[in-house]
Picture 1 (cartoon, helix red, strand yellow):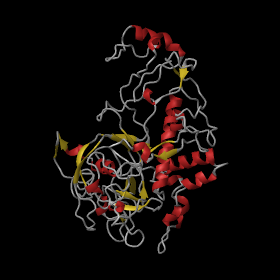
Picture 2 (picture 1 turned 180 degrees about the horizontal axis):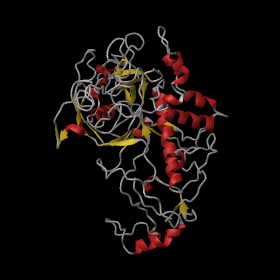
Picture 3 (picture 1 turned 135 degrees about the vertical axis):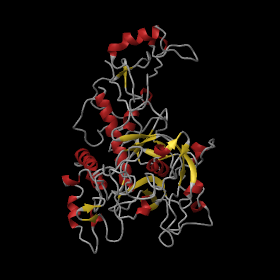
Picture 4 (picture 1 turned 30 degrees about the vertical axis):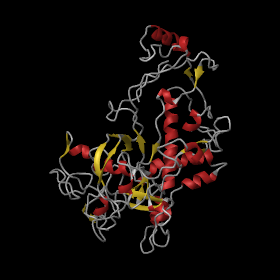
Length: 484
């Protein structure tokens, strides 16, 4: 995000001069923008979205989603289908132990005294390393917390915990931006509900340690000439979240690296060209391109020349990045995505930004339309939209659309969960293959599922973020400091 915004009272004369010179006018009314003399409608100068910490821009486009390898499992759950994915951002690497420890530290510092259950809820399950007929006990106490594993992917985290991490990361990044831009002061003593939450701030439910608010050009606002940051200012970033299945698969294939104009020159089976798991470059010939299990009893090769140099997960910056610059999109650890699993998702979902799992919500408001105060953790309460609110809508009628066009909503067919199927609305997709998987699962089109509350030693995650504005971007430019 590159934005140049008027900040504080010192630039009032500059704003007035700019408006009087006619440099910013509405093309439909002729009235000046950012002019308090005619009401003060504000338009923020804006170039493009700032690239958030750890993210890489994934230029969107069309691709064939689904099977890129033979269907060994005969599940027929990844039938090839052409879809389009909008541009978005994705983490360069999987979320590492050091990142998750930062989250745990913040959680216990802010909520530990009065709400210790928040910290306990966030804790990974380190017991996932145990094997009834194998010795992995050292990893229980060492893998998450020992500094030797700081840059290794966090595991033992379920889908719900990964989603909570994304929400926490959104608030911490936006808080840092507000501090960087001189709007808020650093507040290391936040506790309980007194912590920065993006939604609460935008709803006027968080004050914080204000350093200098923005100038309010509305002459009738009654705010003594200043106001809080709004979404229209372009200062705050969109939410961090898990990628959708389509986004993850598109980013993994990274066909931007073998496309000439609109022609894809090589069909990819993995996140690289070719159909083998070894590097064909003369300089690195024969070296493994991913961390996976080559065969029964072979997790890393022979001493003296370990084929992937990792018996379990490898550091998140291991091997060669794909053509988007993303590391370990095949092997290392599987990764959670947002989608709810259905065998026929590829037939049911939209062909533009396909995703199953929508539950439409809105902020809780009182009878006068005022947002209810934040909860004890500093968050704005949310609720599902009601059928009455959707009466005049054509694009959706109910809040919960997880089962839309699916057999589960038909009266004559239901998934017999726990008896003949493990599929229900808590079954979440994970992708990518892992250190304990064979090469087959490293193909981006393969898909598996697990209950959203379950955790394993081979599933981690990475975050994504929506791209606003141009799908191509003007380059990863830092935000210009707000002028005083």
